[in-house]
Image (tube, rainbow, N blue to C red; front, side):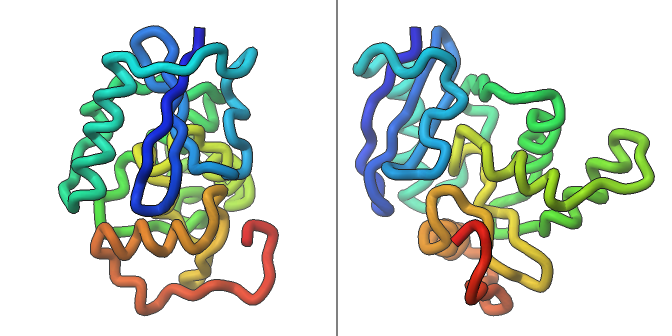
Length: 179
């Protein structure tokens, strides 16, 4: 059974979802793909040990600390490819970011392929069900375009600034699919 609880963050309400001993979701209110990876939907509301641990993780994060992804037992639902992309996201240090293209190059090498589509990587990044904890906000478009954050571009920029990333070369595109 999947259960959920609310968390009031400086960037708005967040829903945390747990199943058994694992955190399976973290979404901003109104986020694109909200709850999309939870099979059968969320069955109950409530705080458990796991969700409370996730709230403490978020408290530390928003207090300016840098809690590790490995501090929480995570079980995001997704294909093998998506899992591999999400693992790569977890390797991006606080205060830094990578482009979709850079991740595509890394994924191609890991998979023994000549090349990989940055758009395929973007699809996996965009469907990350554990925003913030699996740091999809640390991925930007070519030349520093702030695009592709299901929680909203404004939140993405705030999270990067909160982590101390140099955002001076980043920009919000005038148009795009993920604004």
